[in-house]
Length: 158
View 1 (cartoon, one colour):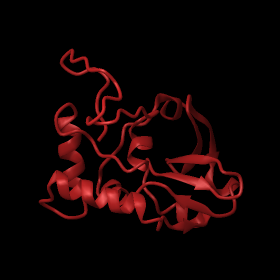
View 2 (cartoon, one colour; view 1 turned 45 degrees about the horizontal axis):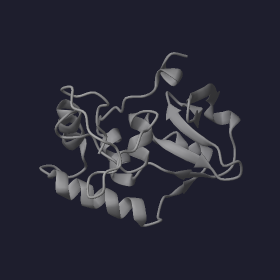
View 3 (tube, helix red, strand yellow; view 1 turned 135 degrees about the vertical axis):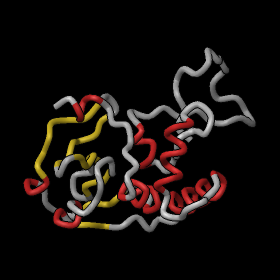
């Protein structure tokens, strides 16, 4: 799940055995690409919006988690050409196979991902080759159904 860094002034030690393993992501789009979903407690509104956009209606968190776990581990992430990338919604992350560069898709353009933020806007037609879709298929479907992930300001402020 993706949680807020600060919630009700709670403090907890990191990396405790038998507890959730804390992972830190650049933004929600990156966390979603890694197969996570919004937390039902600290991000309640985002959680509700995510489930409302989920491809199956009336689904429960455990079912979503099981689906995302399957999709993270099945190794079946599709390969697409540049023309097919245009069919994907904003917020999807892809990997360019020949260069190994990760890109965020946003507004018909691609932004190179890094740990510190996104690079300059690159129009999709300037890219070529094959791309692996990193965002799980069910999350892509939720995005197509209207879920809009939070995106780091380095992409949205350009």
